[in-house]
Image 1 (cartoon, rainbow, N blue to C red):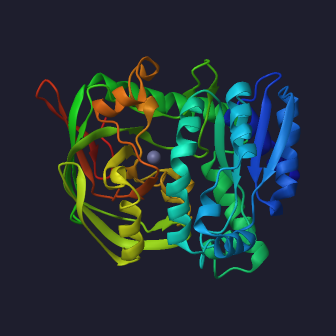
Image 2: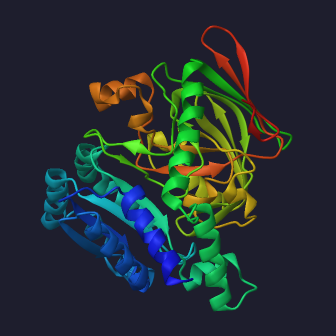
Image 3: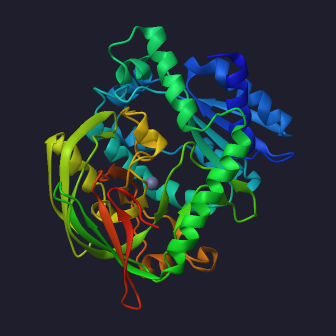
Length: 408
Ligand code: ZN
């Protein structure tokens, strides 16, 4: 990859992804093998006027494995004061956050998942109220760069360097790093916004999904549900792009209103392991049956993390011919794979998918039907013959998707 293209990607991340503001603090999360690209992003953040840029290097999986192995579950769950102070500093200063993802999908393989999950459940009540205070107040973006391990997972037949180059190409194509990426994102965001505006104008009561693979499913929306897509705006009014790439128009459904069967169309990479060929059956919004040809135990563990983990938190519409799907690549990474085709997410709903959400307390939003959970896991259900019909509150049936793609 040429330095020029990487610089242009780094500029896109700082300017369009995080939209770093003058005098704002920036925190970058990245792994230690990505120093070269991280340096470029740091420089671009300063060029945007950042006051300070801190790189929070991630603990490599090889070290994390031993931490989980040797520490007691109580120690793992501890949230020491300095961590709380760190989050409080963020609540006070609202730094922009840039997550540069590069780890291999199976990097966490062999880690004691049950122990890790238990410790997270234990620390969640301490972390959650702090997280709630930060929600929707700062810009953040998730972007990717290839690591050798990840590239070899996606392109096992290629030698290391060729695999990394191929993954770079796929990342840059799907992230729209064209000759003028900033302009490309402007028009892409406009297109997504137009689609969301149309969907919001329909006043949808529920959606009906059908596909020849066995998906036959109805899901209800809240009266207050709104469709979002592309960039978002912080409560303070700063526009940013949380995901690069992004292809989806999404909303949060109403908890308790989902009936029927949804069949996965792509493997799900969860906690470093693959769950393949699975389905869920929903009744009154809750998963009452699930089966996976591979990884069924993990799937069951996932939906029993807490009460909300067996309800839906997201419905997302992505056309089958999206740039991510066109690469023909399984990225083993949700940032990309969720942007390949239509999907749902199990777990937590999005507060900003509620109209005028700043007016309501979390409890009020929960009462409207916004699901709460410590997890939010996307799974793909889009296929080339998926149809989705919207049933509106005034009794009309409108086709949204036909043959896997937009029908409006
Ligand atoms: Zn999504």
